[in-house]
Image (cartoon, rainbow, N blue to C red):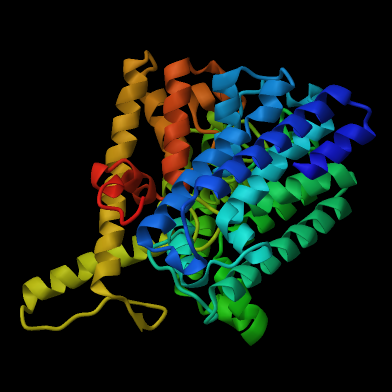
Length: 466
């Protein structure tokens, strides 16, 4: 909260500066209380249960504290502040602001910072910069990191977190430089770079990218959104072993094929159905497929006006998401690959019962538990999408819009189709639907099971000292 506080003070915005001072005071007060009553006697006392609690409750607490600048500054009410904060830290990028252009720069920077900190992960960044939890760090990191596997590229947990953070910062700086060269001013370039690499999608203009009408900027943004959808651990390995590592990664190659094939189909559909010029159709299709598949949610043109087939493919990319270990949301391409190979293995075993088959990814045999975990996660996502869609239908939202809101928030995208489409905000939702959206975003960012465990009564019983 220090950078927006400094910006507010430099802008002589005394009210905003006071809001951030209050927020910082509350953070410090909560810190001292947790330190006082935490109960841990040493850093090695953190086990699976504590790791889940630190991550799940830590994310919840940070998201709640993140509402203070909006509330104290008088910009939003309590429920809208929760939506904005949860959307920021979860990397969803959904907003309830009808007009962000009237907001002071300190609030705009706070929105972007919440995206950026939440993108890589609050716990990962904290672990890289400030602290080390001993053996317990593994349990905390596993509860926050995304994807079917939780691979480490370095033996020490903190070294691994530090490498991820360094790659994250480097990509943000490179992205900001690229945006500056494309014509953005420094403040806008830095804000959009943070929300691009975090695949959060918060912008400083209402029409996001359409404000500029700059094809070079759109291609630059599409490139960095695709880059951000790749595993950051993969980039850390590539830094040490060479760029060829990236192109040997099976998941990233499949993700690129999904992006380019889907973009081509949508571009053809736009040319045939809407009589668009070829270059503009390709530019718009690639940008929005990159935006929705990476779950960033930037908007260059109103894709709500696209033909039905194009919107169906875009919704599919929202559901699939990016790669495991990236800042992107969604199901993750690695899980899709594992599930396809799992089905293929079952078919082969039906034909040849004695055949021993293993599921492999990147020439590594994947443990059966990981494959079953991917299937469980797929089932949980589908069921929760249906449940939250019914909650919103109960709240009076029609069938299609309910599915769109549920899918968009569970995939951490933000904009969808219809009521929260490319040119709309979540401000149109009722209080119940907004609170349901917050729950969706919280579940999605921690990949469901970390949060569901916290809701299990047995988690709080027989906890060995809790």
